[in-house]
Image: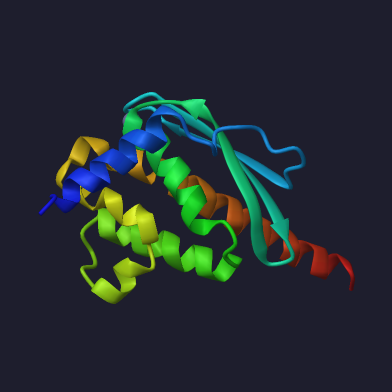
Length: 155
Ligand code: ZN
């Protein structure tokens, strides 16, 4: 039986070396930079929304294999999801990395991003794995604040 962790490692290597998600979007609605000074990881996430749905996402930047692969796999996992679903999955991912959940049903929602489960055993890599997820979380929260602001302006 092939070790599940080998499959996960292959997936991470594949995404870190040459990701189809590493590009510029033609017309992004939002863009946000993320930086992990501990390791030197730097990413710029671009997001295109269609109503409440994440229609497209891409990234540019550089950094270690974990940070780059985590960004790319996050994009695969969250594309096509609603903002609400995306936020739920982001929370589960952060909980998995911080070892705050082992609930199999919750972890299933992570799809391929479950490949980073073992990062919870590597404290030096935790920030690398979380960089993209925290960056997107900030982005979605800012977007919501902006939307609320727009509603207030109508009064
Ligand atoms: Zn890193």
